[in-house]
Image 1 (cartoon, rainbow, N blue to C red):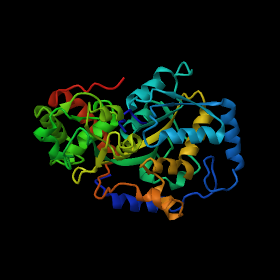
Image 2: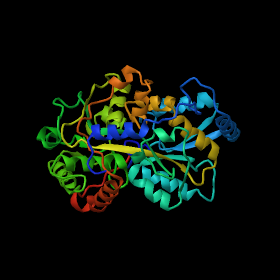
Image 3: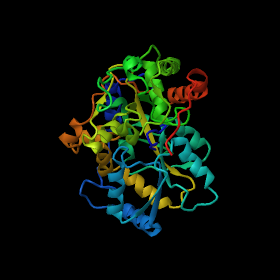
Image 4: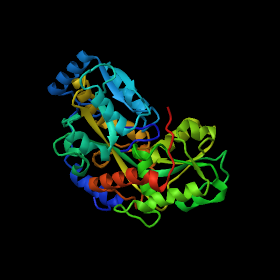
Amino acid sequence: MAEGGTHLKKPILLLAVLMLLFAACGGGGATTTTAGGGTGEEVTPEMQTLIEAAQAEGTLTTIALPHDWCNYGAVIEGFKTKYGMAVNELVPLAGSAEELEAIDANKENPGPQAPDVVDIGLAFAPQAKTDGLITAYQVSTWDSIPDAAKDPEGFWYGDYYGVLAFEVNTDAVENVPQDWADLLKPEYNGQVALPGNPIISSQPFHTVWAAALANGGSLDDPAPGLEFWRQVVDAGNFVPAEATGGTIASGETPITIRWSYNALLNRDSLAGNPEISVVVPPSGRLAGMYVQAISAYAPHPNAAKLWMEYLYSDEGQLGWLSGYCNPIRYEDMVARGVVPDDLAAQLPDTTGAAFPSLAQVESAQTYIAENWDAVVGVTVIEAG
């Protein structure tokens, strides 16, 4: 999933269109309680069997789940408390490619360094399936996950999405940029950074792509995004270091572009020290979805399934929503009246956001990865 500041995780679809699709696909969502419950109903016999099998394994091994990403810290604690499970957390700042590499590297040695589950950028999912690194599992709430957001065989399934936003340390930056063109202004010399390496990670890759949408490109033409970041470099504004919550707060990377939920959570965590401004630019609004999957070599396969049941229950989905993420079952939950008004109200304005198809994500990712060095010519140094 998450990628410490990164995470490389349809024809052009506006947010309203996708929401209609979600409602159409999610109208028949299951209402029976699953492992993650939240409805107050009794746990089914099948779920009780899964819970006991997972508890017998005792541990779930995750990877690349920073606690400040989409409220994962609270989500993990909720899972541990609910089921009395231990959670072994590997490499919180890993990127999607590194998550899959960890599965592959440990498939013959299912020890403590072998992840049970991954949260990866959508673009990485098809190849992971082709390579046999992930296995199929359909959660109990499967029918309420939109068809467009899941592999029909159950090898991967969308979990949440957000839009890209400017996160700005206003103690270090006097005038907060409002749109992409502002990032080229001389006043931002040495202040603009990406949230990781766009060659290997989803969040910075999407940042380059979003810049393309704001500069004459499209979901099928990411080239202007590379040209834009070349201009940022030429202007002297680019900082070749991965922007994280810590570097933003310290002023090392006072301006960055991150998923809206990461930026808003970091703003809250800093509690005004320093002050953080979060701006969803009016142009180049690009939504990005991440997906969950279970390792085909999971040392704790039942714990992995139980984790998925928890994440896709109402309780788990509301956990992500509490972290400013748009959970994938959101429309189903709204239709059933289980989304608190205060949580719904905290989501940022995403009007006009473009939702790329899987084919467009794969094509754009390949293009940007292959051309970043030649066009932009800067290597982003990722956080250790």
